[in-house]
Structures are given as structure tokens and as C-alpha cells.
Image 1 (spheres, protein in one colour):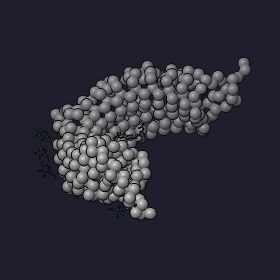
Image 2 (cartoon, protein in one colour):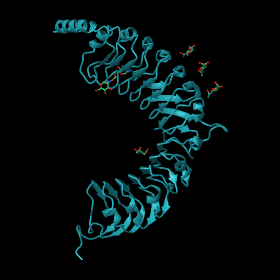
Image 3 (cartoon, protein in one colour):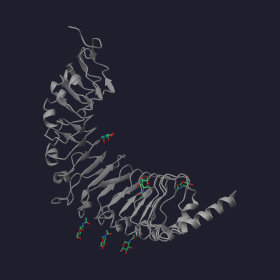
Image 4 (tube, protein in one colour):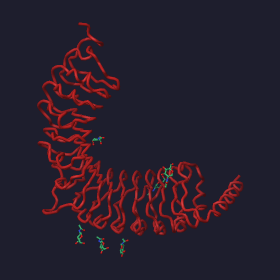
Length: 409
Ligand SMILES: *[C@@H]1O[C@H](CO)[C@@H](O)[C@H](O)[C@H]1NC(C)=O
Ligand SMILES: *[C@@H]1O[C@H](CO)[C@@H](O)[C@H](O)[C@H]1NC(C)=O
Ligand SMILES: *[C@@H]1O[C@H](CO)[C@@H](O)[C@H](O)[C@H]1NC(C)=O
Ligand SMILES: *[C@@H]1O[C@H](CO)[C@@H](O)[C@H](O)[C@H]1NC(C)=O
Ligand SMILES: *[C@@H]1O[C@H](CO)[C@@H](O)[C@H](O)[C@H]1NC(C)=O
Ligand SMILES: *[C@@H]1O[C@H](CO)[C@@H](O)[C@H](O)[C@H]1NC(C)=O
């Protein structure tokens, strides 16, 4: 059996070897035996190799193989079962521009040498592994990097400025879901002019993002996406004062309080998503923006009535979540003017009175209506329901009465 397979591989390897000019091969999503890797090392011109989603490649990328892929520019090893780390022989891949190990089982720390010697790297993605230890200081040497992804690992330590100060080509950085500690200052990105995406979804209490930048510091970049979830922030970071191209902002699970700073919406006319889940805001954003589609504000400290000007400010809202605040009074009939709504969650408040008719007749694409745990009353389901798309209706714990169907008068 064994010899048969070896013979087959030998033949197959010989066939591959004839492809002297092959520059790109995509073997993603197959079950090739791991010996295919050594076979591929014999291809002299190979520049792009995609071995992602290959269930039979085993636990280790053969170390000898690194030395042979001298001209390789793209190596995609994502969605495999590799363990260990990116060992130092990887530095032999000196032409490499993009390397992905996402969704593997890498479980060691990163060595001080190896990866950092890959000076041409533009994309490095190590996210969704189990790597630990601190990020090596030599990361700062990867000065061509545009994308750096280390999210969803167990990396620890402090993110000191010297780790990224020289990575001035960075456009996308994702540090989310690790166990970093200490505080991080955006002024580490002082010389970065191309940053567009910063993702910091923290899942531990020992990490914080500094909200006060050094006096006079003005960022050179214009972000499109900023995610700072659970970053121990008591106020929006000062950096936001200088941003005008943001499309998505997530500042959920912080301790932001007081009135929502409407200048954030005024300054960023392309803003479409604002996630303020679990903060202490006392009011919702109100500033006209037709691009705004998604507002998440569950678990804040909003009191008083739901502003009836929402449709005027956000006419194209798809998703409005005000769950678990302390909103009271009747639901303004203007809510029915949010004609694009798909999800409306007003549950867990102190709303009273009847539900405005418009919610049943004016919103053709309404998919989810959540009104649970309020003090609403009325014959809520007995009117004319024009809910072509409805998937979930939550009316529990209110004082609703009546029957289902059109009431005969
Ligand atoms: C290889 O094929 C997969 C699946 O069709 C595709 O998603 C991937 O982008 C391809 N890889 C490269 C490097 O083009
Ligand atoms: C990584 O996982 C492999 C396979 O489970 C195990 O043999 C190895 O000891 C682990 N290495 C570390 C550094 O935890
Ligand atoms: C970083 O690059 C400099 C200059 O290229 C080199 O002298 C130094 O050894 C490198 N540091 C690391 C840790 O690789
Ligand atoms: C940043 O790069 C410059 C020039 O390449 C080098 O002199 C300096 O030591 C680097 N800084 C750090 C903190 O690595
Ligand atoms: C930014 O670049 C300037 C000039 O090269 C340098 O003096 C300064 O230390 C850099 N800032 C950071 C935070 O690395
Ligand atoms: C908003 O933040 C909460 C809490 O961090 C999270 O569970 C939710 O998925 C976020 N919503 C979006 C649309 O990102």
C-alpha cells in the first residue's frame, strides 16, 4: 500500500515538475496528502500558493519546505490544522508579500526571529489561532505591512508604541480578542497616514484605550472603521474630533456617559453603523444623516420619551435597538415613518399607551418587532396587519388585549 502511494506521488511529482513556468496554483478546499507540499517545492517559478482549507495537511508545515519557496509571494495556509508557531526557518521565504495562517491551531508564542525578517510582507494574518506570549518587538521591522491581523489569539503583554511606530504603511490593524493589558495610546500611530481600519474588541478588563491624546496631536489618517469595544473608555477618544470619513463606529461596552456627542454624526456624513451597546448615554444621537442604517443602544441610561424626530434625522434606518433603557411615555406615531425598518427593538423600557398604527401598516420590510416588557396596552393584533416580511413579533409582558384579525366595526 505504502509503496503504491509513494509511487503515485513520485509520478505525480514528476508531472508537476514539468510545469516549469507555473506561477500560481490554487489547491484550496481539497484533501491532498501532506506530501504534496514537498512536491510543490520543486516548482521553480511558483509565486502564489493557496493551500487553505485542506483537511489532510497534518499538524506541521514541513520546515524544509520553507527554504525551497524562495520566490513565493503569496502563501495561504488558512483553515488548516497546523500547530506550533511560525518557526524561524520561515524567514527563507524572502519574497513573501502575503501570509495567512488564520483559523489554524497555532498554539506557541512567536519567536523573536523569523517572521520579522520577511521585510516585504504586506499582509500578515495570524488571527483565529491560540498563540500566546507577547508580540515580538521586531514586528516594528515589518515596515511594508498594510494589513496586520492577530485577533482571536491569546497574545498578552502591553502594546507599547515601539511595536507599531514604524509600521507606517498600515491600513488595517486588528488586535481584537486577546489578553493584552495596560493602556494603549493612539499616538502610537503618529506617523501613520494610511490607516483606515482599527479593530480593538477587547475581552478583558486589564486593557484600556487612552481617550486623551497628547496636546496638539493630530492624526494623519482618516479612518473608515473604528471598533473599540470594552476598552475601558469613559469618554469618546479625542482622535474622533479629527475623523471625517468614518462609516462604522463600535464603542460598545464602555462607560461613555451624558449626552451623545452629535458632532460625531455631523462630522462623518458617511456614517452608517453606530454601536453604543452597554454604555451610560442619557440621550440618543440626533443629527440628520441619511446614510445611518444601524443604531445599537441597548443597555444605556436613556430616560424620557422616544424623540419623535428620529425619522427626520435618520430617514433610512434599518435597525434601531433601544432595548433596556428607561424610556417612558407613548411610542410616537412618527416611528411608523421609518419606512425602511427591518428590526425595531424597544423592549425592556417603561413605554405605555397604545402602539402606533403605522408600525403595523407602513413598514413593508419589518422583520422583527420587539416590544416585550413594557406597559403597553390596546388591541395590538386586531387591526390591519401589513407585515409581509415579519419573522418575529415579541409582545410578552405588556397589557395587550383583544383578538387577532381585522376588527369588524
Ligand atoms: C483559491 O480558490 C478559493 C476558492 O475558490 C478562493 O476563495 C481563493 O481566493 C483562491 N485563492 C487565490 C490565491 O486566488
Ligand atoms: C500545541 O498543540 C500540540 C497538539 O495538541 C501539542 O502537542 C503541543 O504540545 C502544543 N504546544 C504548546 C506550546 O502548547
Ligand atoms: C530590524 O531591522 C534592522 C535594520 O534592518 C536590523 O538591524 C535589526 O536587527 C532588525 N531587528 C530585528 C529584531 O529583526
Ligand atoms: C524605525 O525605523 C528607523 C529607520 O528604518 C530605524 O532607525 C528605527 O530604529 C526604527 N525604530 C524602531 C523603534 O524600531
Ligand atoms: C514619527 O516620525 C518622526 C520623524 O521621523 C520621529 O521623530 C518620531 O519619533 C516618530 N514618532 C513616533 C511615535 O514614532
Ligand atoms: C454591538 O456591540 C455588541 C456588544 O459588544 C455586540 O454584541 C454586537 O454584535 C455589536 N453589533 C454590531 C452590529 O456590531
